[in-house]
Length: 332
Image 1 (spheres, rainbow, N blue to C red):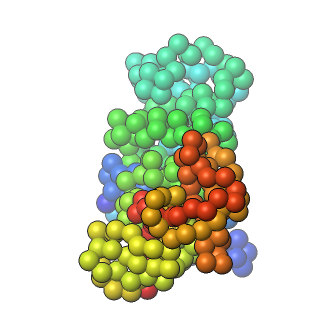
Image 2 (image 1 turned 30 degrees about the vertical axis):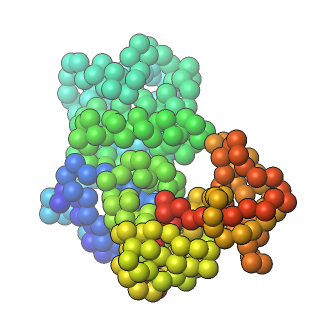
Image 3 (image 1 turned 180 degrees about the vertical axis):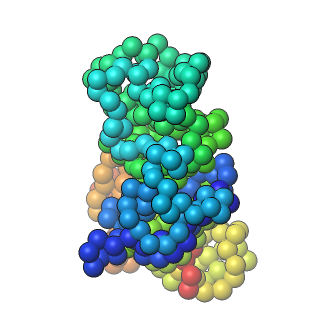
C-alpha cells in the first residue's frame, strides 16, 4: 500500500471531527471519501496532507510522516476554489510547483495543458478564465511536480451540474492517463462513482463502508447509508432463486443470496409498465431527462420515474414494475 492511515483522530476542542479512522490507498488507486457535509471528510484529507493536527499515524510506504511538513510530503493539493495565484498567468501558475522544487520547466507545462484541454491558454490571466478552466489549471499545477499522492477536496462542487459532470469525466481520464494515486473528497455520488476505484463512505467522523463503487451502490452497509445514496424507501423482502419479493412486487437480483433482506428503493426502482402493482399518479415533476412521479399504492406514496415522452398525467391509473438498477440490497 502506498498510503496507510491508522487510528487517525482530529479533535476541535471536545468535538471529534474524525474518529479513529483506518484507511489505505494503493499505488495508482483513486479512493473517494464520500459523505454529507460536516461528516469530517475534508478534515481527514487535511490531516493526511499535514494541514490539521491529528493523533494516529499517516504513513507512506510504511514510513511515518509525523513531523514531515506539508511541502515535504510530496503530495499535490487541489481545493474547491482552486486557489490560483491571481497575479500569474496560466503558465505561471502551472510551473509554480516546478519552480519550488528547483526543476526546469522543460516541456512539462505544455504537456499538462494539453492533458487538461487548455492548450493555447498559456498567457491567459486567472480572471479571464471560467470556473471550470480555473479548476483545470489548478489540477495541472498540482500534477506538474509529479506528486506521489494527489489530494482533491471537493474540486468540482463550485461548478454548475452540467459542467461538473463533464469535468468529472475529464478528471477521471486525466487520473487514469497519469496513473495518479489520489484521495478525492466529495459529497456527490455520481462524482465519486465516476472518479474512484473504491469508495469510502463517511458519517459522523467515521468510515462506515469501503468498497468498489458497484458494491457500495448495490449493497449499502446500513439504512442510513442507503438513504444517503438515494434510497427513499426501505422495504422488507425475501430472496429466492435470484428474485426478491416485497410489498411493491418482485425484481430479479441475480447477485443476491437467498433469505430475508431489505430492499432500498431509489426513484428509478419503480417505472410505469404493462404489468405490476396498481397505483394512481398524484404528482409529477419534470427533471432534466425524465419525469419524477409520486404514486399512491395501497395507501402509501412512492416515487417512480417515467420517460419525457410517455409520462402519465396526474390522476392517471398506472401499474409499476421494479427495475433492478434502482434497487439496493440491505442486510435483514
